[in-house]
Image (cartoon, rainbow, N blue to C red):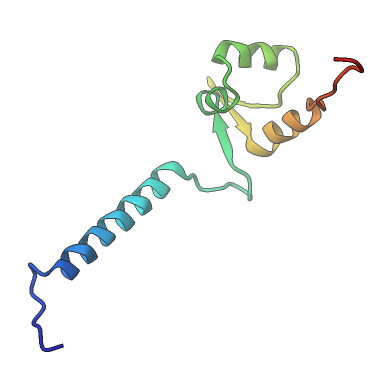
Length: 101
């Protein structure tokens, strides 16, 4: 093991690649996470519509019909992440099969 490790050595390059991947992962985590407020995460209508795969207009219908809880601050609509999860759980339907099909 008397080999000298220089900046051109394969181990150094591999270590640099690993650090780059780690940095990318950290940047992605920071960009996609939001701080909590009182232990609760709040989502915008754009985020909720993307998660539920419905249009923002459909979310407005859900609000107008009292199907989904929300906060309105000025023109901004926010949803508690836990309220979205509760709504989904409340509307869950078990799969079933009819006899003979």
